[in-house]
Amino acid sequence: MLPPGHEHAFNADRLRKEEEEYRLATKLLCPSEFVVKTFLDNGFRREQLVRHIYGYDESVYFPDPQPKTANAGLTMLFVGVCAVRKGLHYALEAWLKSPASETGTFLIAGEFLPAYREKLEPMLSHPSVQVLRHRNDVPE
Image (cartoon, rainbow, N blue to C red; front, side, top):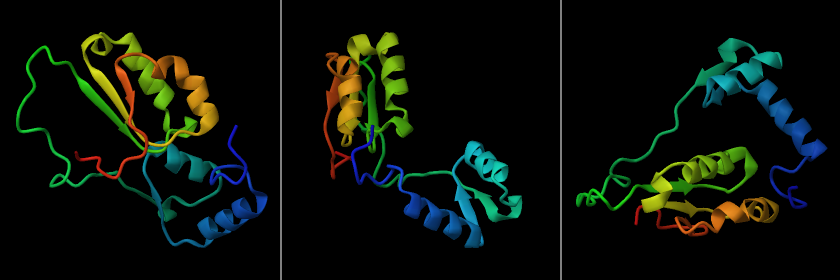
């Protein structure tokens, strides 16, 4: 359940405005084929839809120049809003089923929706999982 006033909570007026903006747009950026299909299924023309890929700044985000020792374990990092739509629960389930959770660390940098955090609490309490909260220093 999303808290009242949350940006993704249902709001008929906001939805109507967004749908009108989509219809008026010359091009819509779509980060996946699933998104393209969703727009096509809702009557948009393929010419309006432009596929793009999320990226990163490799001058800011790069591997540590000092490699870990072989037995240090894998470090996993999730950065973003901790909401169902981001699929963090799938990543945590996979992590906890993996032998990586025995020696590695799964870091979570982001704010949780309260009900989502409550639902995930059993997985978040695993010793290999660290919740860092929202961070402005992700590269560090």
